[in-house]
Amino acid sequence: MKKRKIFDLSAISIIACDCLQGIILIFVDLFLVANILKNQSFGQDITYNIIQIGLFYVIYYTTLGLSYTWTGYFLKNHNKSIFVSIGSIGLTGVILMIYLLGDNLITFLPLVAFLYGFSFGFYSSGYHNLTAETISSKHQVRFFAVKRMAYQATYIIFPIAIGYIVDVDFSIMALIMVALCVALVVFSFLIRPKKVYKLSFNLRKFGNYIKKNKQSTEPLKFAYLSNFFRGASSDCFTTLLTILVWVAFQSNASLGTLQSIFTLASLITMFLYLRYYRKKRAKTFILPCIILVALATVGIIATVGSEMVAIVIFYAVYTIFNTILISISDSRRASVARTLSLHSHILENTAFMEFSIAAGRVFSSILLLLSGVFDSLIGNGSRIFLLITLGVVAVLYIFFGLSLYWVEKSLILQDEQFHKVHVNEVYEKIED
Image (cartoon, rainbow, N blue to C red):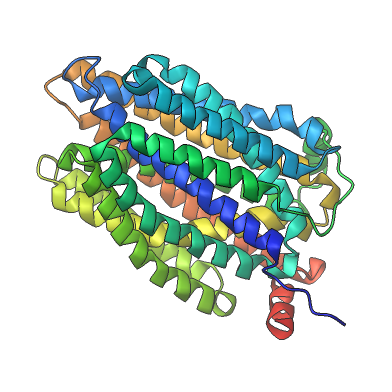
């Protein structure tokens, strides 16, 4: 029997698309945000720009979440790679729009946020479902760990490079981003699923199924809850870090350098995760990660007014250890539906996953927006409510880790019934 390769052209193209969309996220989440922070259109007080950032993410995440309802009805009957390609073309248009708007970007920020969410919704809805059909269940852990390391490598090279280019000319970097988006379009056409399932898309029917089968679908409910806390904490932490670092250093180059250095260090934790995960389960990694990030957050709040060193420490701890939680979350997101033999409901499950993570993202973005509003009312460069938001997000991050622990525990309890998740990890070791 011919042994199937894990990393064929489709798998490599998936990883390439993941890395390229990661570069887009670096550009938007780090340097577009930093560019908004230094904008003086609303006066000298940075809190007004924080309000604009919060509004940008509320619109973006709301549109992104809703897009899964729009695309789901079409995905069940059409090639999913088409949606990845359409989304990639849309993202290219958004980045080109950012380049053309230049200094007028702040005026059209809500429109940019809407188009960005719509385009990314098309891209990610096709991407996530295509990944589920392309990578077999027994290869999930290894594939997602390798994919995460490649993604982390992107965060080593590009933040520092983008940071220095943005400090020279933001428009030049936006033009380079357009070229990278074109590469994303090319790779999107190279992904071919190995097995296409007959799919449905009826959210109400799937929701009723989950309610009627509470015990057997418990891992799904924990996964949705985990995604809410992931969206409410991990993504918001990135934005908060960008704000805190930029306020402290006033430099895109410094922001990019810190991201690159600490991402390089995070590869060590990913190698350890890949080496020991099967033996010690996820809980061995989850608890230390959330404890260290929580302690680093306390350090920032406790040293308010002179927290530059605490911010750097927090940046290091979060970047190094968060990658493990995200890798665990990604692998469970892709495999939990098939683990429960819900192959025909992959679209509904993906939509529910995105609804839950979008709800968390919108919630934390509203907190960020409100922190800017309240700090602007206090005036004098107040960051009290920004730090309060940081503390709330840290608590949500703890729940993100705990909910991942619950997902893992519920899957282990169903191990004997389904014979798929951890048994397949043994098969993978033998076959590969």
